[in-house]
Amino acid sequence: MNSAGSLGGQQRILSFAIKDKNALYASFMPFIKNGGLFIPTNKNYQLGDEIFLLLQLMEETDRIPVAGKVIWVTPPGAEGSRSVGVGVQFSEQDKGGARRKIEEYLAGALNADRPTHTM
Image (cartoon, rainbow, N blue to C red; front, side):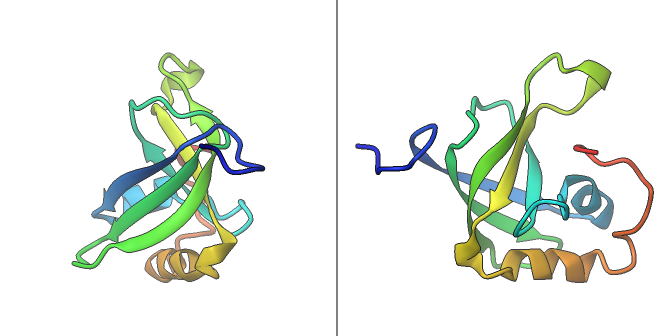
């Protein structure tokens, strides 16, 4: 049963671990409202799918639960040999917690001109 206003359908749980700063930099999408992450995955997602992300950063043992939705899909065979996956925008329910945590890890690296998975 879909709730009103839900695009794309079901909510899915997705676990994602980022173990180093370079991978976090390449996945983080600071230009998205509330922040977001590019998640490499071969699973089939549609724009608007609701995602519940269990995010593990660096050496932390606790995972950060983050609600979000799919706003970007890079399909297999995309030009430029881009990584296959989805961009997940963090929900406002998070009140910026996941974004702040990521930005703490990336302090000083956010203005770098290195390429990422999305830009």
